[in-house]
Length: 459
Image 1 (cartoon, rainbow, N blue to C red):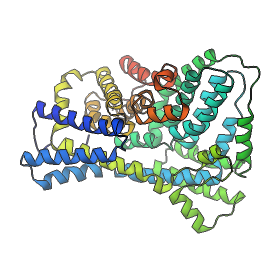
Image 2 (image 1 turned 30 degrees about the vertical axis):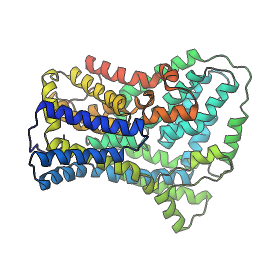
Image 3 (image 1 turned 90 degrees about the vertical axis):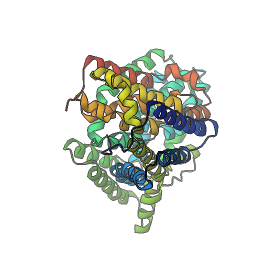
Image 4 (image 1 turned 135 degrees about the vertical axis):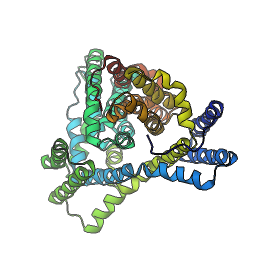
């Protein structure tokens, strides 16, 4: 919970009305008017300012809540900067291209859906972005499924499941970093703890995709060969480009702090880059700030390699985090969150009820607003004290935030991810939803383990 004390005690009616207005404002802006969430959040902050001034709360006190809310996310801001640097360094060092190439070599005619699930998971882990994975290699796989006359909804379900597994478990993912930072959990401790629910969901999904996979005896895999050849042509595909991954894993196991781990891994990738490519100092600094640009001549591969990351590419996420946390700071300062939680606090005395309610909150925000960042941010802000009261460590909450927040977004037809995936794969969200097994299993398993009392860490 934010170290922010309420300076006002609103009525339940006022708290509900303000909450509904904020949710409606953000939902309408994102879903109806196709707006980025930043602008409606800024309007929501102005609404809260207006309410506070109407209640004769001084501007200085309201501003203090705004600033304190934003300041609580500064650790996440610095982590995002290092994530941007890491992704850029792994691109120019060849680490991510080599991982993608390795994933493409796994594709075979047998167990098509299962292999697609595995490969998109590998690539999702490599690039740390579910939507990038879907928009690049996912498009190639859906085209292959069409050529082979296979079920497009099942293929799309495998693509989405794999991409969001990678997004959820990748240390390069902004949602993964956000979930861990917002409740003060070490990044790699958060990833390890997610394994308790994520790996069972992964293996169950893999079995289901294997069972559903038809026996394909002949196929046109020329597209995959074309992509593989394009990657080889970059001169980035070498075994030693995986050294930065080894560095990351080793430092993680010896529990080096996340920022230092990311920095050392990025430095090792820059050193590796000089083995096969000469970069000038200015070019390296430019790539680390603005991201790497692929130039293979194959549009899909170039799009996969050309990530708008670097420090500059993180600005969208950082600005959203700061705005959302500022709004949260005002919600706590005005006592709105405390008022709403007090009404349900009597029902949150058991571990199982706290986990179920926080999971449903993350799902509900995705459904109402259609924005996964806000589902993570608001759930983390609202339930941290509830987890503490029932004796649960914060990493349990960060896991729920991802199990019921990150992976639910692609299942909502009007969400950011749902609209994007439907557009690029040309498969309706409702059509692939029943086959996005990993995304469906994650919240079920996290709630189930909560009721069984398994895999939970006590304070």
